[in-house]
Length: 537
Ligand code: N01
Image (cartoon, rainbow, N blue to C red; front, side):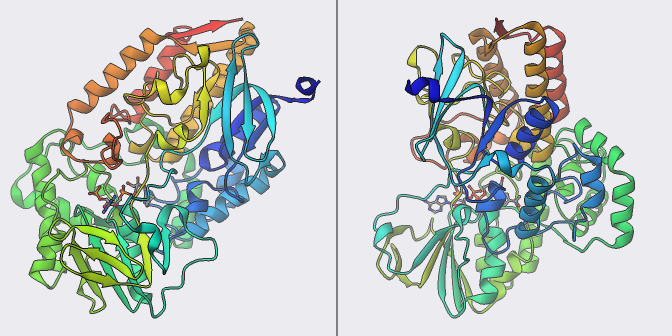
């Protein structure tokens, strides 16, 4: 009796951020399927719903950090600046949800707690924390690569009597820093974006740094009406370029080594890109920065020189200069006024390699040297990246194997799209795909389109089940590892490798082979009748 009442859907999408919204639109409105999305937040937006910390903004330019699937949407939406702030991006995603009438098929404030595969019917039974159970032919995860916040296990953390918050789970009502003494722990992208903004408001800000970071200025500016008109007229070409480049940016690939030019020319190129701002410093300079340590050192030296020029106190400047890893081997942030913020009288930097954090006390942060009394602690300590958001759901595949068991030695996927032993489950921007190494909307749209085409193919051929073969998965995992080893990415203790989470297996998770190359591989798999996948009716 109970079973006959269980609702049956074609597809459950988990998440309603950039990926989930497009997946819902594509599967429901283009394929005409019965789809529901579940979203943990009480609004849509995913990353852009939860990361409301001061200074949060995008680090890809707005006109290509956006959807390409609707020309009407492109024409009617106008971005204010090159790098818009979080509220504007969230407003865009809310607009998309309204415009395409997606909200009626999204269950907000509802977490999927488990999804269990039934071999007899080739379906998934999905359960939520609100007691809802549905059965679906497919589950598509759109849970984000950076959404499981990492709150470090520092002794005494819960004894703190002031306000504490994580940048990735920022309170909707905001945090008032006026007149407050603030500790900020972590100097990744989130810490680097929030430091200058918090410093302006707080009475005093102490930044606790474990690893100094290379960052390049955004040089953000408003988009003029002329620039906007140009963008709107040229969207087709811009999107085409994003799909044809390694990182999903519409920049012409640079076919030049850092050693093809003289020292003066190189300096001029770096300086020009520094003044232009953003990731062009990486993608528009030289083609060997991530492959050749000596080439990389030239870029790193340039950034260190800039830090020493910007920061007045030489001791602080030295602490801020990264020296232990190649530039770009940890995800590079881009910033607005980060380094000059350390010239303010109300800001200090604590290098926790010199004085480790021993404990959080009721009144503040205690290091091996002294106690820092504060009113507010901001944890800008990142995420259990790429796997955390999937592993917090109980996912059980064939023969009762859980994803946690399957990934106990690190994530294993075929193309980052499917996992052997978990049929009819697709992972948008899953580990083993370029994902976080790309401009995300480009990676997301490529995955959703691929999954959508696959489901159409299954309908046409009468297939009810698709599963990555173990051989294909093993070969892909080897390929992903080999590709990463040929780069400088292995030389950093990064979240790409899972090093930021104690006990997490050290596996390089994203695919470094480049977006265009990866798309060609995925298309090649389709051309060969879904090579590496087993389809069954
Ligand atoms: O997190 P992170 P994030 N004690 O992991 C430190 C994207 N993003 O939220 O480097 C003390 O980069 C940690 O130190 P270390 C982007 O992809 C994009 O900043 O591990 N410190 C590090 O300094 C980004 O890469 C935007 O030694 C501890 C920091 O906390 C990703 O999200 C904006 C610690 C964490 O840095 C994550 O960025 C923001 C501990 N126990 C984020 N544990 C855009 O602009 C960690 N740390 C689009």
